[in-house]
Image (cartoon, rainbow, N blue to C red; front, side, top):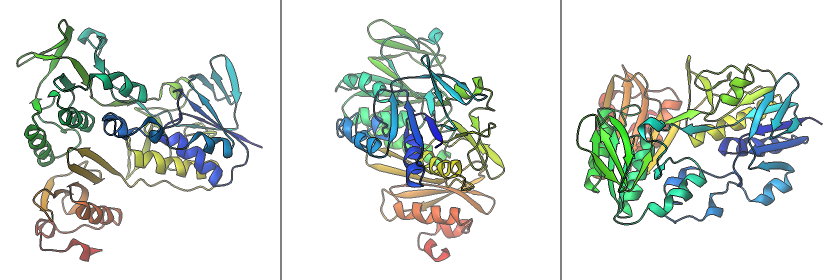
Length: 400
């Protein structure tokens, strides 16, 4: 019976292993986890788990019994040092594991500040793993001064948690506005106002020169005053963990390159999740989301068993900040117009991204109905007229 090995014990790896068994793979199945814990969900790390509203055991995607019952061999706390595609072998701290088929679900890692900028000082944190959150959790005490470097969703979510716990929060974004890489100015304005109302100081166009220690941490900026903090969170994006694949000769370019079925340049190796760059509407993209990690992994599981199913992403994302739930459908790349649609209450609204007359994406703030309708329209490749979107009395559901 064939042996399928999976390197990476995150959301994609766990979903892939479970799906393989569900689809009838009865051969040997090994899931290699670099962390010495059961596979777990990451989004709550910077929210409910950090706020002690969720226990560690609640993070686990499956109980340990599941892996035993389904004969999934878990190797935890050990790093793969090399893949040998020619002999179909994995090198694991001196041990050799042979495979018939291999899946890479190695995820992504936070971008870090270089040591020359003070990135190696005590009190500098990133948010990616359970260990990361456990290390910085004791810092979240009322009155502590927190500097967040990076105005993307990770940074804003951390700011919301910290402000809610009574910390003094400063968020520094190098770009002219927060969320510049991922959202329209209208969405940036919404969340800037939201955070300012909760006491967060937001500095935009703030180019960090370096961090230095002494009576806590002091941040120096190219322009503007210094900022004193007790600890710092770096949230400046992530990089795909593709080094292992690249060293094995697998084609990579800002992620492991896969085809529509998740196969890499090696016919016996597949990949799924944040580590991949996959085809989407004539281009290649990386989708850093739980939804894509699960959906792509389940499609890869089917294809590893010969089902030949093309994976067509249906991008959606979410972010929780204070009492606002942001839901995003689609990808706004290439938009040239944003239409604001009022929600059913003063606290809700949605921003609809168009390229010409084509609907690309929707940002919905406390507007689940607008999000669901927008998502269904995008997936059906149907576009309302911008004037229809702007008219709160027009029922967009009629277009479905």
